[in-house]
Image (cartoon, rainbow over all chains, first blue to last red; front, side):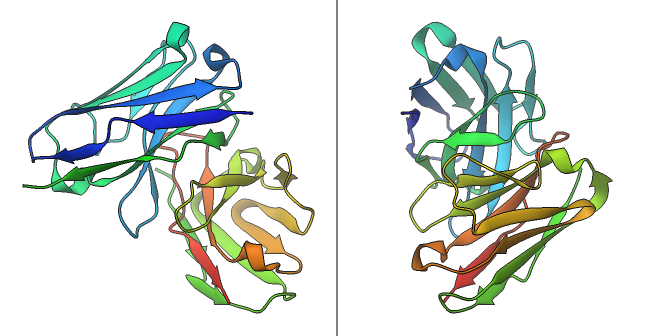
Length: 119
Length: 107
């Protein structure tokens, strides 16, 4: 059974930093691209960042470029999102999602970890 | 950036009825890069349809997708109680990978 489990969310002050993790099981993690998608309270889905299977291709939404860094460790079946210079508008439930590759949808999703940016 | 606009915002129907959800894109793209997701309260999104018309693993055949170019449709032929949820379309042809704002299907 495919499982994605996010962790690392919490309450952080504006301007602060946080590192999210996503641990995968039930599939060959190193064969999949991985993405972060967020959902502000009561709002829709917003793609945040993506990384190819070998970390060669990394891309960010304009809203987080220069502040967030995505990375992965295939040996640990883990995906990360280092978030810095956090703003109130970054408050959201952050999901990790897997993708087989170019031309494929986001096929599996974790349950999300909540990030709240507030003083 | 490809902007996806879903309509209606809310669809009020009864079990057994047919639901038709629309997703319109700001520019044309390949239908092979259009997906639909279902999200229930407190749950993660779940992939329903990919490539505009292919059902994901385990998705019942009452869910169907169609469309091309800029206009796409998700149809639920006979609503079951568990189908009342929010549905999102997504394009995954080019970054940023964008989602529609969602259609809520309510009783």
